[in-house]
Amino acid sequence: MRLLRWLLWYPLLLVLIALVLVQFWYLGHVWYWVDHDPQVTAFMQARLERMREKNERATIRHQWVSYERISTHLKRAIVAAEDAKFLDHEGFDWEAIQKAYEKNLKKGRVVSGGSTISQQLAKNLFLSGERTWWRKAQEAAITFMIEAIMTKRRILEIYLNVIEWGDGVFGAEAAARYHFGGAAASLGPGQAARLAAMVPSPRRYGPGRETAYLQRRTEVILARMNSAQVP
Image 1 (cartoon, rainbow, N blue to C red):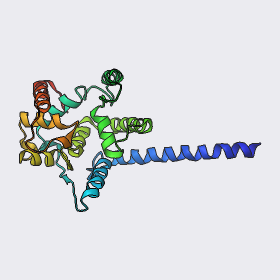
Image 2 (image 1 turned 90 degrees about the horizontal axis):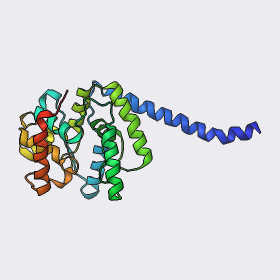
Image 3 (image 1 turned 90 degrees about the vertical axis):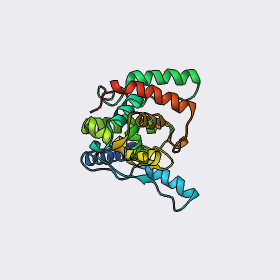
Image 4 (image 1 turned 135 degrees about the vertical axis):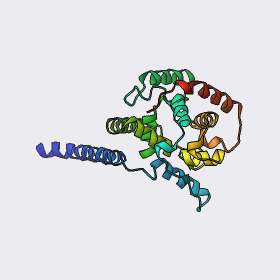
């Protein structure tokens, strides 16, 4: 009987050990990136693989720049657009999550996520774009790690350097050069607001492309930027 119980529990034990080891793997990377800059993310790798299905020579555009070399206007625009309570929460904006849930329930499909900058960073660094309960649970765990180990300044610095801003265009420096022909440090308020407006659907907008939605969203962000607090 003991042997039978052991045989039944043994696979579960192996799964639990594997899960713990995976969490330590994530934790080790988060800790390392406190003072080392990630040069590639899971999202970048996935995007490059899809690009190379069409063109085997495809490459991504990405250049890391320090926090000081990114326009304060862009920092404020991103916080205003993506996570107004960034400095106040510990990784999760429960009010935004509740509103997103109600909106999705009303629409009958997922149209809003309510994710904070920290949650988005967790997904971009480590995870796929799949909308499964397992991926969301892992995203939450990584978000706790990021918030516990990194400062808000470091979280925003990495976020601004790794999110997508065009077809294979990653990070503020590459985005500023791709869309406006200048450096991330020189972005003005209007340019910063426009980049922030692109974040939910970055591959829809090439340089100079204008839509009514993008214009309206840019104006809303521009109006909110002065009150946005950044680290």
